[in-house]
Length: 385
Image (cartoon, rainbow, N blue to C red):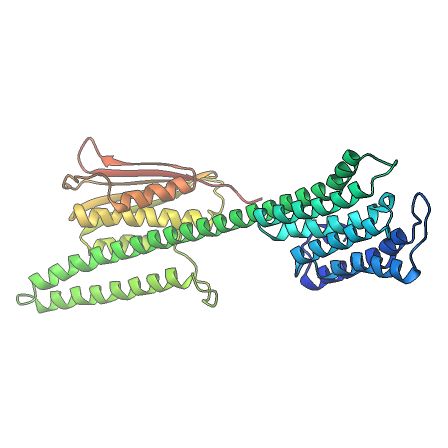
């Protein structure tokens, strides 16, 4: 409980309470006590009410130091200077007003810009130094008086400035983390949408071409193609809603596709003229694959099969997924002929490589020596204790 109180950030009401307590402690106790001290070399002591009033003028402004930090610092420094010069507070009792000045300048440095806080601290230092120099006695020399004033003011300002810089650094780091998380989320959504749209549109384009080709000669076959287009489009809309719905907090959770949905994926590829032979192997003792890894495996197989539909159909394709206790290995090969792509990898290969890299795995895609194309990937994962 004590550690929590020391580390958590105080609420505005609690900060106001702390300032009120400090104001009462300095203005009601330390300030009047310093003013009641007798001059070092004797002399007539001021009336009691003057001592009490001077002490209260030193401490009570601390109650509003967070609202008007510079005004409070200048006010306390001016009261201290007047009290020291007039002898209401002896110079040997300057520790109490020094505490009040330090608290006010800490707030100035922590809440205002560096330039303004430095000007304020310099002005306050000049006022207090002037008062101590004018009242210098055998207790210290004039140089010692200036050093004493600096000791009262400079450390408080430095601490406040360090606190302000630390808060600014924490705020910048927080903004950076927010921007980074937003960028990663945009990348994730873009990757998911690409995989969903590219796969379904490839099938839709293939079946639309078939329907257009046989529209007059085979109305039944054209109708079958249109029904496939309709079903594929509905599934695509469902996937898009699921991907975009994950961005809304009030959207009910929908399980993401994984290893269990791979057979349905192979059946959809058959509609596009690609015979996919799917083989999912589980080595014993194979643990439950994490959901993120299962989704990555599904999307990699989906993108690899989609590339076969777009570039090599009709062709035979073999997809082998091997689940081991430590990783999932993927191998998708086909025997079709593909056009040579000029300009490097497409977005599909980049997306697959990003998914594998995200899980710390290895990825390779390229032509096979005996013809066709091959995509291989390995995705390691940790087994939950």
